[in-house]
Image (cartoon, rainbow, N blue to C red; front, side, top):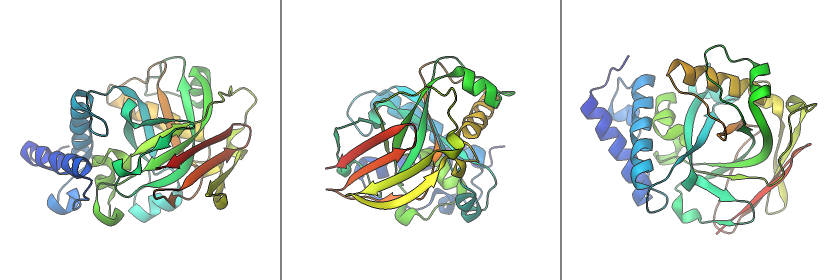
Length: 269
């Protein structure tokens, strides 16, 4: 139930909007509205996504929906924020950087890179009642991905509601070029290596993401279904981090290698 006035939701959405536009981090929404609920936070996110689709934000001009991301998929991060579930954000085409292209870091505020498995759907998924088998049947292929998470909130000092309002701390993302079918692929055991400027900075595996990346997509489909939203064919789903994140800055080169999926890389200009 919404516990914050519509006027305050508008105000907080504007604060986050202008933080991104000016590239100047803002205070916590939860500090400005002490009773900010999860429902309020998703309302703020939705309002800014609708505005971005009309106006753009990272780029000039309208942008369109590409899919969704799932955040807070590790037990460590959930414990840090005092929650027992993930959250979700929205992926727009202005957030996508193609493999081999430079990512202009000036568009971001406090970027960090993490390795993920991206699912691309060939069939619609609508919860509740979505199962792992349904996700496997609806998936066209998977890709290695790098999500560049970012926070409009100063020093990453966030609560669960704060990160939801801030589009699940989304920034930009990179997809690998080699699509792989899910058949006979055990993503739970798929090892991950994250390198920055040639040095290994993080390792992990699919099990770090809700014990299996497919579990994250199940959670997303069922959560969105309760909100009346369907995952559509062609949607890209970033399923959650496979290991620790690493901060990035201009000049860095980041590469992710996921067993059986291959590599994705990005240069920060």
